[in-house]
Length: 126
Image (cartoon, rainbow, N blue to C red; front, side, top):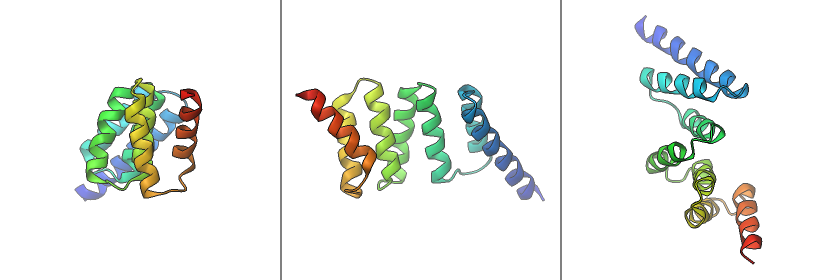
């Protein structure tokens, strides 16, 4: 019974986080994600949504730190490397962002987002 209650609370926090994020209430969404993490081990999808929400909230340093930990657990996560590049770029760490996007392309040479980001930066470097 306690497990079912915890699972229901986790599902409610996830739904609440999605709604808060959708409506731009990022601090509330991040709070929901934090409560969700206290209730259960989040899925990779949930962790990526948390990182994406941090980026949307312009909490780039938090997103980058979280994504680095996520990548330690899921080293082949294409979305993890792509989002890490975005967070690092937004912090002004262009070289590190390029490295993250190159790592994305190592795992998936057809990853369009990473390719576009790198192409834009190569044009800007000219």
